[in-house]
Amino acid sequence: MEAMEKEIWKPGNMLYPLPAVLVSMADKEGKYNIITIAWAGTVCTNPPMVSISLRPERYSYGILKETGEFVINLTTRALVRAVDYCGVKSGREVDKFRTLGLTALPGEQVAAPLIGESPVNIECRVNRILPLGSHHMFLADVAAVHADEKYMDEKHKFHLEKADPIVYSHGAYYVCGEKLGDFGYSVRKKSG
Image 1: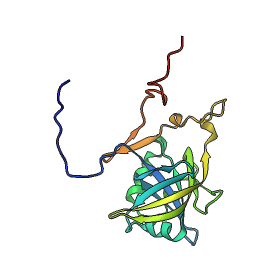
Image 2: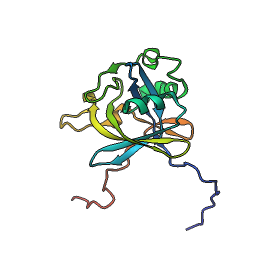
Image 3: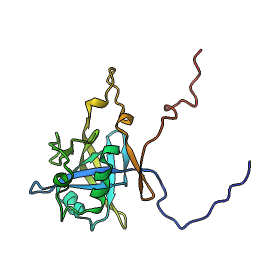
Image 4: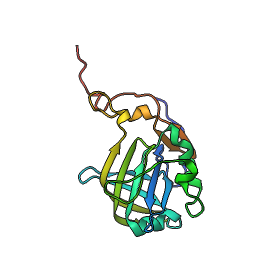
């Protein structure tokens, strides 16, 4: 095997691609906002927990800190313009739901709205905020999950891939590609 030549870069965040999610919220007066977050992830299965990280100077930061509730909305090819717009426009200046023609649906467990066009909505309650430096992490408990029935098959299995989910990598958005295998395929015995 040949040795590979690699450049050494200064320490940085190179964990790509990332999910590009729309995080929706409502302030104490009931005004809705949406922010695009690429720094979002699963933290724990039991209890179910997720995290999002954002800069304290962002408009959404104050809302999240005050209310402690938000919804993570998974994104698709059809939502890519909204994903970009909500990442560059501030909710201080524009009503993103109205401007983008997105449907705000009521949450079951939180006051934050769901985005109707998203195939999966994850209602969250902030458990704690961890100041980490440039970004603060909102560690949150999952309060409810909504899955769009149009992506369910006859056996009630959910097929997110049919929604054309997107990811973010180095300043660009990509639709997820072809399936390469199922979990455990590398060690599964071949039938026959």
